[in-house]
Image (cartoon, rainbow, N blue to C red; front, side, top):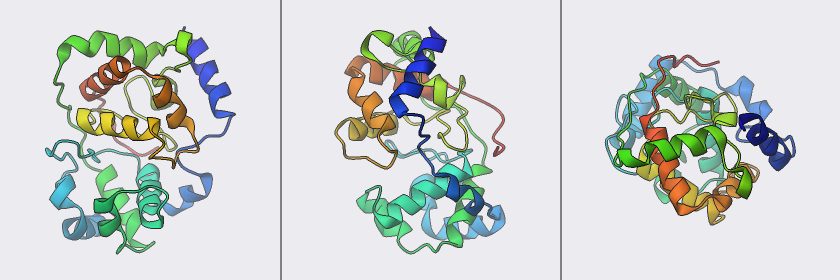
Length: 214
């Protein structure tokens, strides 16, 4: 079943791979110490110093892949991804500063997320691991890894805030977030409300120890 889900994903994406474009890879080398200074000025009010913001519906950045963070920050700044709050803060960062901030948060320790409904974890695990071939939903693990560890192209999901995951899935399904070349829009649109909620709970429960950038 896992193989079928991954094959479905390949067909779904048209073999384009997606969440971050290859030219960005060379632009993600930053200095965490420099990034700490910039983050203290721009980011910590919402994301906290260690990147594990306790604020509901706010993404946890700790341990996120630097390549992915660079892409998202540049997408916010250039209008490919929209957020009134993030647009205001990211707008002042330069191309030189962004990789430093990404390196800083990528170096922070991942901690477990907060599961708000443990009764949904088993259902969430099944959807995350196997998808739903009947409705064309690929396994989340096919791109994001068995433990939500992600890659340079696909974000780490480990311990992510439930509310944030739900809001992003809603935005993808509604066509409000479009900076992934259509992959997550298609997946989110096919998932039921129950599947989405269960997967969000399961993602919050995931924990991996290795936060080193690949």
